[in-house]
Image (cartoon, rainbow, N blue to C red; front, side, top):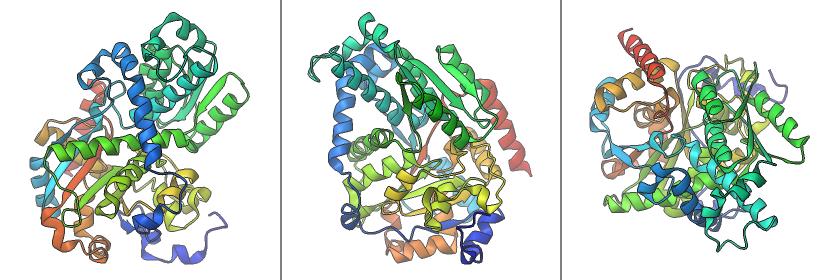
Length: 449
């Protein structure tokens, strides 16, 4: 047990449940009203808009390099789907009523990388490429046509530079695919939790994959150390990168446009609840930050974590941020939800998010696998295990005492019939058929028990 933890933490019902790997719902008592939060952090809507403009500059390159993105004019974005049949299943299984709409944000279908990590990781790689091109005269200005990035001159130049990243899988896919397309020499350091098909995919794209028989944190540390020792190398740092964070924020502007086009209101009487799977915190944190810039206190961002890997919950509930790991609490710290297999939260992201995200909850391995099978059966949507974590959020909020307290504290109970609930699906379309079938059979077996 980490000596900085005070005994009183461990004597609460919350921590007793966490240590025994029981699902919990937890309200973030560090959160403050949006207007006050904006005074606490050095970032704003301007940073979100700057990231959006940079991605627009790269759109001509993205369309040429990845023709599948042409349908959205080079935009790396997903649609949402109303999942009414799944909603009925949740109501029957958890013995509750879900008022309002239940939507699934389909980041499993994002172009290029097929996961939520695509926005942030691709954005950071592109920004690094833009910076190098401007500094070395390959671009005259940001007014140039960015199709130039496909030229041999650019590829030959980037081949002299390296990009490295440490990951459980999905971040590495996004960094690797885009970095290799630009011509960079890319190395991805992967932990034992990463799936073999993700390693195989990266190697098929010409990416160097280094496997570590350790967890995510150590894979990142080793990758960072190697990168820092090489002046030609750039490290995409999942724990400390503000550029990753900004890349994720752009999802908010796009979701707002989609909701408006669907005539879905978000205001004081029409609250929006967004349930986001959370590993180290970058992607849910960035999306939450962006949404708060648009909707302020009318959007409620709720993070989902495995019972075995509640790193953000522990960091915020103890107020120790990245000063604690799940190992400090004697938790097994292994999960089939590999995208969420992170024992320590990001200090950068958790210190920003303490003011913004509303609540968190955990779910078990069996719960995620049961939901995976049901999502295929009922909605014909195939997701990887981590991508189901957000689906159970609405019922966790509605069926727990702490969830009911959260609703009461924010005067939301009378507004639920006008609410919109969005479960954020983080990946799945790139999972090989045989792997998805194995997940499905496991989910069916769990459902029978």
